[in-house]
Image (tube, rainbow, N blue to C red; front, side, top):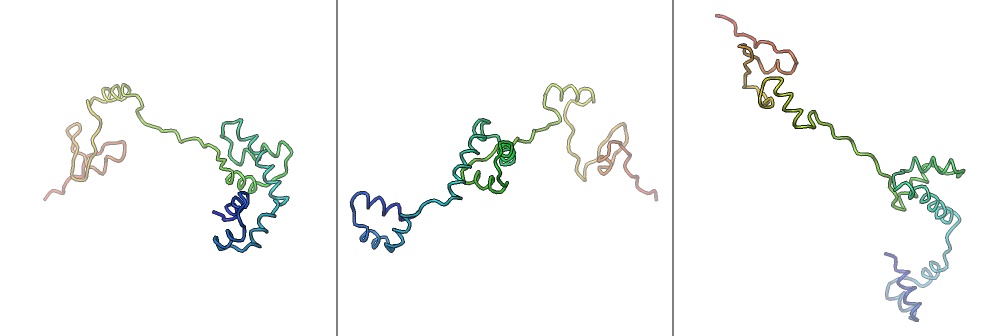
Length: 161
């Protein structure tokens, strides 16, 4: 936090600037230089541009990010760069909303899951097969490595002695 506004508040109350500057360990000339500061043309133009950005940002409930705001400004005839718009929006705390990724699930409806399982012929969802497990289907023993494909293949048989 800058100490200069505190010194200025003390001066407004009728305090001694020299004593306050000595207490804050700030030289008086730096305080007076700060108090005489006027905003530059660039700072004034930035403040005006932030107002224009707000005109495009607010009516759309904050959904516009810097690319849309930039396009709207250019359509309105304002010549401005993308980096300047992005910087000013970030400084003003204006952030556009982005759409969330849709959550996709195989079976969003529990009834559809039950119907599909009844068609397959099992009453429960498929269990995860580990390396040590073997699966029986139609009287054939299946190897777990063959379960990655959609086709069921018989497990490799042991060589006969």
